Amino acid sequence: MFVSRFRPWRLGLSFLLWLLALSWASLAALAEPTVAYRLTIAAAGDNEADIEMTIRGLDRRETLDVALPAWTPGSYEILNHAKRLFDLKAQTADGKPLPIQRRDKQTWRIACRGQSVVIARYRLLCDRQSPDSNWLGDAYGQLVGAATFLYALDGRGLPATLAFRLPPGWQAAVPLAKAADDNYAAESYDALIDAPIMLGQIARLDFVVRDKPIAIVLTRAPKDPAGLKAAVTKIIETYADLMGGLPFERYMFQYLPFEDEEEERLEGLEHANGTLINYAPETLLDDPSAKSFLVITAHELFHAWNVKRLKPREFADYALDRELYTPQLWFAEGVTEYYAWRGLRQARLISANDFDEAIRSALTYLANNPAAKSVSLAEASLATWLTGTSSFEDIPLDYYRKGFVVGLLLDIELRVRTANARGLDDLLRRLLRDFPADSPGYRAEDISAAASDLAGSDLSPFFQRFVEGMDELPSEATLARAGLAMLIEPLTELDFGFELEATPAGLEIAEIDPDSPAGESDLEEGDLLRSVAGKPVRSAADFEAILATLSPNAPVKLTVLRDKRAVTVTVAPEAVTTLDVAVGPLPNPTPAQKAIRVSLRGE
Image 1 (spheres, rainbow, N blue to C red):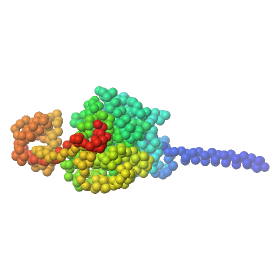
Image 2 (cartoon, one colour):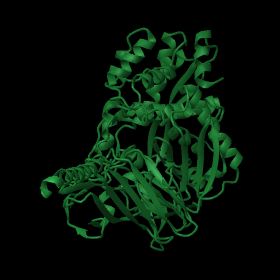
Image 3 (cartoon, rainbow, N blue to C red):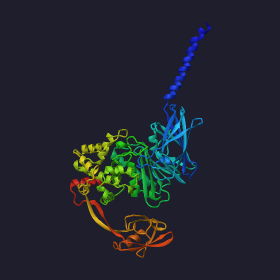
Image 4 (cartoon, rainbow, N blue to C red):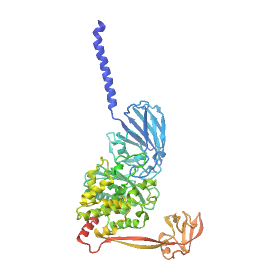
């Protein structure tokens, strides 16, 4: 009886405890997994970084596969970032080690053993200064997410946070929002690695354009901060007007000088909410009117529309472990380069003659490159991967420059067919509308179809001939329809077959063409040129002046300094004929020609 009297109470308590346990288990199962990263640099001058990755809310699996990307999106080159990752270890939340097995060159398998929390720690060698890689110096450094952060193969969509431990006096600048705990927050792994990191003793210019916070981050205060801010503001506003507004909530320009470089050199990489740009010389940003600074800034910013939001179909979902081939890089990069120059002209930051010079330079390159007649733009877009490098010295046809020209010709074609009512601006806005950032991305036929619709006539032959095919571009005739004259003239010059580079020790023979007179001589790369034909050479101007007095195929004595001793080498320069292209306003244009020219050149 006694037992019977209390049995219902005992059953109710058991049921309640069981239900409570089930509820907690259900809540744990429903909790969204998260990934937290902490990046530590022990001391200024270290070229290694320590990374801690904590994954919480795992589904108590037995194994977890993690990997580091093989390349950085936007830089079309396999870099095998994992070769700079070492000392990888994993443990439980209470510090117990977990076994790790390497699966391939960039993937590891962690034996989770049913743990809901896994912590991985590793070290990174940061010794490659390029916008697609990691580098740490004495006073500042740069990191890109693809080269830095491991990801769970089935967890790229997990939200992530990022915290830093930095040397005294160092700061971090990242184009991400901050969470309540002052850590940076990203909605996914892809968003995390799309935010470059600048570290060190840095200077910032913070301002607002069209209600969006903008930051310029540098390694030191510029000499003309007001001019720098004004130039960048004008570029942003010009593209906002062209494209119908700004596509981002914030944007950060990160500028870091190359270490120990005096010759002008610039490299940039686009991101959704910012760009990382390496430059030389270190004084370049002191002059906000420098065209090289303006062009790379404009190019990387325009990618916020073209590539980061408007993407080729192959880029809709980035594969991070292998090449991602697309025949549309001419549109992604070449058209962006066209808009870099055209946007700067619209902003009145360069002259109409500067815009003409950009056209002339691209046309001159094509006129003197045999590959322009044997490699299509679509093929050139693929070749950047096939060569294993993004250096255009190793690619038969530069799709940036030919893409620039084809973008210009397409712009003119649209304007001619619509009496200047529509142009390439309208095509880009149409594609942005039809293929937003969360869409599957556009195909070649989508560009052709949209252009044909805007033109009111079939433009598919244009793309078949000049993008997919290798027909010679109708540059002269098309430019004339836009009120621009194009003149091609042969230019004959003498050439030894070597490239000279100014160094503190003098003019150095930096590169020798093996199929040239220099390549068949005893000259060596690294030789310091001291005299030509008995005349001293102290500068590039001296060399050019002497070269102009020589005769083709006539032996000439060159004196070079090699290993601190003078060496005399006899070389016969050969006559090399190239095509020189000139571009400028067409005299006495028709009203229709002038209207298009004014639209393009901002007259």
